[in-house]
Figure 1: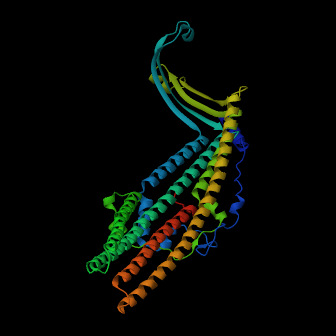
Figure 2: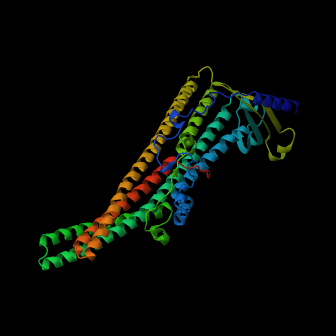
Length: 469
């Protein structure tokens, strides 16, 4: 027991004085481009307020809120990501178990024949042999191999959790996009049907005027061709709406027939009549899950340099075992069959360490690659946000011009209706003005759809502050 206490004391002292091999990880400094506000700014965005986490709630649509809740609970991509997080957590638990003493229990019974040299003169060479024992081994992490392995596993787990967050961001954005596409297609479909109805009236009036000799057959042919052209657009818009609803079913983990009917009840485009909070570049580092994942993979790669470096040094283990070995079962529990052993074990690949040094060089190369990937991810994030901001701003400018055109077309309709009531013009002129007004409405509806799509792109580029992993 005195020997056991000495060895345990030695193990404790070695553990306390253990050092970590390899470089200590230092979080890379953020790019200067992230130190201030984004370059693109307008009255449509708020750079003073942090980006919203549950950004879809800004649309104030309970149906959208429920669909996104369903997607977060049942989407198949999210389930895959959750399984990968569980795997990474299990691997971390496995690495952490290396800090504990490793034990094994064994028992055997065999009938054997030994050589004359082993058995001795006059001894039985054939006999039964029974053996049972318990062995305990504890690796003294003197050079930090185990600690670095755990550090790397923690980095892998955090990166996998960030990857899962990125999947959630994508699923939420695409669910909102599918819902918005279905709604905007329904609005555009209504406008298209109204235009066809107006053209039907124009065709009827023109044909009547042709029969009365007040118009030429060419006029009737032209207005009929225009009506048929607009009518041909309706099936395509209806197909877009159906495709969006099918995407929505898949994203929420449903089959198409099980999609709630309420999801298809909205017939107007999603609109956001407030500035979008975007925060600043510094907040983007913490919000974007792909940046967090790249940073954690860099930390894991740095830790693996230490794991490889520790292979240059001896691996020291303390262990012992107790057991019993006998020629028959009855003697297994006697003092003469009892055995025990205790002592240190040292393993060291020396002097040929070229393989270990090659692994260190490979780990350093992996770390440099991870650093480059991190820098690239940050630059890509800046590009995506700035691009989304610019596109959103330009689409709003375009919509303002279309709004002005629609207002002028409305004025023209009012004038022609007043002139028709006074008998100054015929009904065909009024219908033509109404058709032009409806065309501007169709352009405006399509612009609204593109603006909603740009909003979702911006929200996705800003990331999400997820904490569900």
